[in-house]
Image 1 (cartoon, one colour):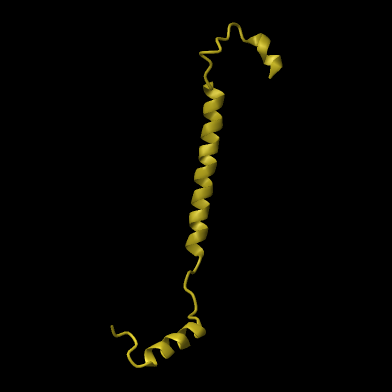
Image 2: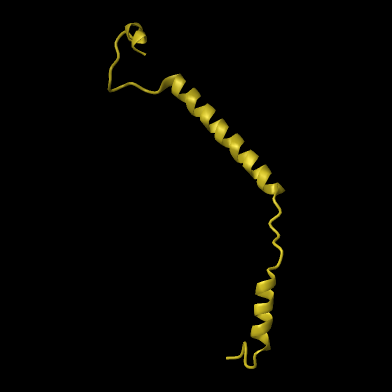
Length: 73
């Protein structure tokens, strides 16, 4: 970066902006994030979230409903 300093004629430190290079870097990063989110959405669409019922939980609920007075307040 120091080899570019002689090319700058008069640089006012209070008026320096990111410029075209900053915009290009930001645009590339934005496109990368958009692509990653689109890919993640596609991959999550393939996932099947249905779980098999837990046999222990099923027997516990049957035991609780078999007790007299269960579920009554």
